[in-house]
Image (cartoon, rainbow, N blue to C red; front, side):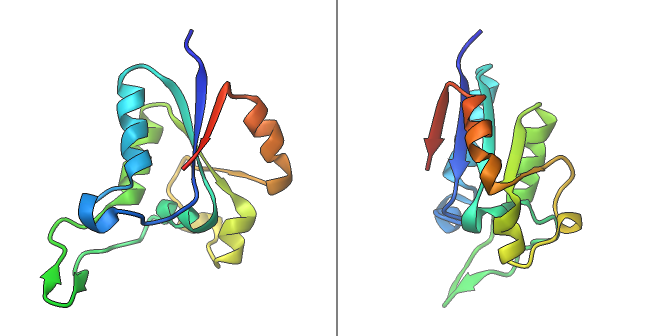
Length: 128
């Protein structure tokens, strides 16, 4: 079996205007497609990725309209469907006023104090 990898995403919405997705979420899809044993941890602002009702359609910057908006919650749901575990830091969500019922099905909360235990389950922990 290959090494287990945890991808930590903490900087939310980076490159989503240009790429229509989060680079690391996309990379995780590719890694899983190559049979990697991978998981994702959302922390800090990136916990917002898991909000079910987010909708960036209509997003515009001046005259430039985003015609293919990011659908990060859908991207995460597809990861979960591929048996990729997706965690989020519960305290980060609470600090941002995000409650568990607002999140997509299958994301798993983890307390900050439990992060070392989570990290110990993986051979590689990568923070992006």
